[in-house]
Amino acid sequence: MANDRPSLSRRLAWRLEAFGFDIVTALIRALPIDVASAGGGALFKALGPLTKAHKTADASLRLAFPDMGVAERRRLLAAQWENFGRYITEFPILDRLTPKSGRVEVIGAERLAAIAASDRPAVLISGHFANLEVMAAVIVAAGINCDVTYRAANNPLVDARIKANRFRYGVRLFAPKGADGARGLLEGLSQGRSVSMLNDQRYDGGVEGLFFGHPVRTNPAAARLALRFGTIIQPMSIQRLKGARFRCVVHEPIEVKDTGARTADIEAGVAAINAFIEARVRERPGEWWWLHRRWPKEVYAGLDGR
Image 1: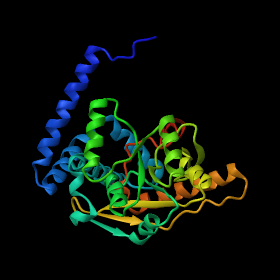
Image 2 (image 1 turned 90 degrees about the vertical axis):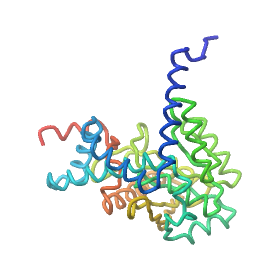
Image 3 (image 1 turned 180 degrees about the vertical axis):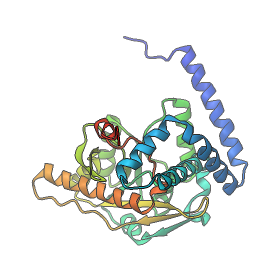
Image 4 (image 1 turned 120 degrees about the vertical axis):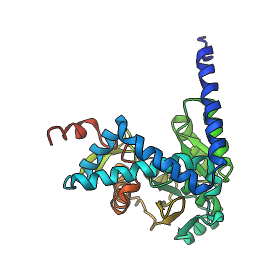
């Protein structure tokens, strides 16, 4: 049997990364909330344009808004980096950014209350809007028993700290992405627990659809689970108000109709999800994470010479 134990150098690197994570977390938690948030925003607004991700963000904006002027695109790129930087420095203080703290208002809370009171689980979705972690805080505050999907950090020591940070504001159940996570989601839904996930990133092998008029592939899990368990997809979005204050909007549910044509039904569900995400991005383009490569390589390649 092969030795799966990480090398000594890898384990040392993990410990150093975890130590750095602890130092940064302690420093941020010692600051007033708005100071920490604004500091991260200013830092990333300055440094973000120097990274490779800035080119991806610029290309993504050009794909979504081909008629947008250069000045407006630069303004949105700056806003995106500021928002992203705020998110980074808000992460260690998520327990202070909850509905109970007074920094998060919820529109459509009655929809979450209905899910919490029902014996039927729901599939809750959102995207990388503003501070995406606020979604989980709102779900927890509503009393919904929910598995939260996430991408585990490569460093297991840092991953444990990320989970612990989420524990601070009440998130107890996790369903890591991947095969193990998929089995966990099925088990959770079978036991009556809801599930939340982000549905706005590229998913190779997913269902093909359109996003801002360009072909994309989207994770069909939300539509498949809704069909399998005969439940709704409950979309949510997070808006940044002023500084480290937010609005969570619980939108009209998406119902995936079961016509018996499973493939077509899933495609229809995915199309509805893509349309929801696109509408929210159009409403507040400076708060979405454009640095993700949402479209396939060939779509970005089509920008050459434009």
